[in-house]
Image 1 (spheres, rainbow, N blue to C red):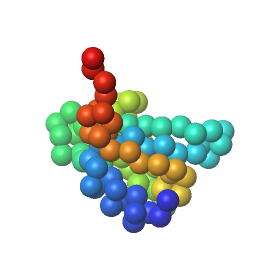
Image 2: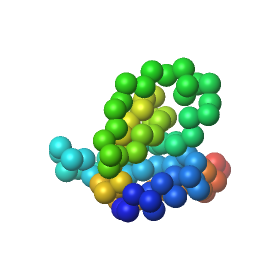
Image 3: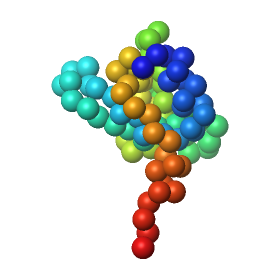
Image 4: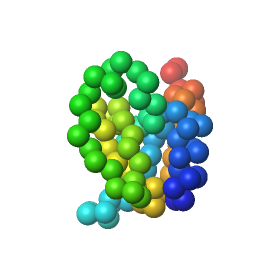
Length: 90
């Protein structure tokens, strides 16, 4: 995925499920991520991730950590809110 397109989608969706192909194993993986660090919980987590120029740092709720994501490896970005609204609770 194009870097600017990925940034725009994440800014629009807020929390999202980001599916990407692992650089090491080549398997599809996913994380539940947010680009919005304006939250006390996230700000209190330590961030030791250093990003390369091609990657974006996101906070991943499912791993409770910061991750750098390379947009080129991203296959899909799904808004978390849409997924939760479609969930059948009955």
